[in-house]
Length: 90
Image (cartoon, rainbow, N blue to C red):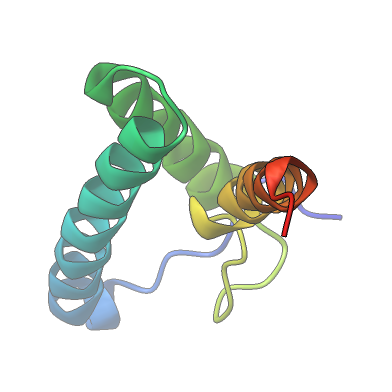
């Protein structure tokens, strides 16, 4: 396993724009998911930054990143939906 992904400078412009686009979307998702799970919005920002940093440095596939905030949110929403179903008496 390599520690860092290879950097190709011929793709730098596209990588920067792709990274900025992904960062904006991830940041908004992380804020929304932190509020939906009962946390403060800043905790979502911290989580998105830390997960993004580790995924960029230590990710194993250069084309597919499954470390967005949607993964942990799936676990949280499963618990929320299960508790709502358990409380429903009808």
